[in-house]
Length: 108
Image (cartoon, rainbow, N blue to C red; front, top):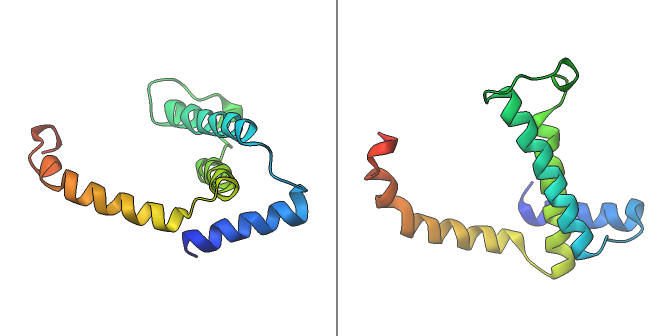
């Protein structure tokens, strides 16, 4: 599946199950909430905080997919082609960061 297909699948889901998109501000709040859930899992599972027994069942992949779903919603409702935008971003990062990361002593 490519990004365009994923955006289309989300749009189809919204049309068939979600009635309509939440407005952009609601989706932004939803995105923040989902990113917070990802942060909580990572902080407790990989950081110094202890993970509660009830949190050990949480699926990081599922939470990351929740983030992607809301990002696709925001892109769809604002007319963004994420496939194109992501490709452009990779090209920018490749040109800008290639030597920078290779020369970063902290990464060696």
